[in-house]
Image (tube, rainbow, N blue to C red; front, side, top):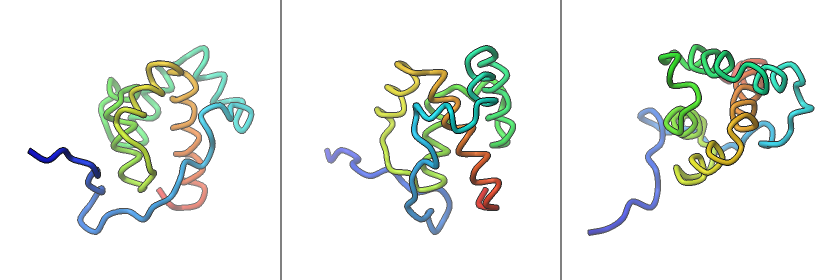
Length: 109
């Protein structure tokens, strides 16, 4: 039995490889998102899910981060997604929301 080494790309043709627009700990890049993620993480999770046309309960999940990462060709793994959310849940949510906003501003969403 061969283990799966590469994750499939989102969509038929696959996304081009890119990277996160900001780092996990780049909270000063958008203080509003940082404050929302710190004090209202459920609201931020629902905003993220809404941005991705998903159920509100999915915003703070490993599946959501993994889906977003594969959609935009961001390198990583499910294990890394899990560890980021388990160890730094608020920072990871903020990173995802900042990335969504930056891609939206570049019309790349």
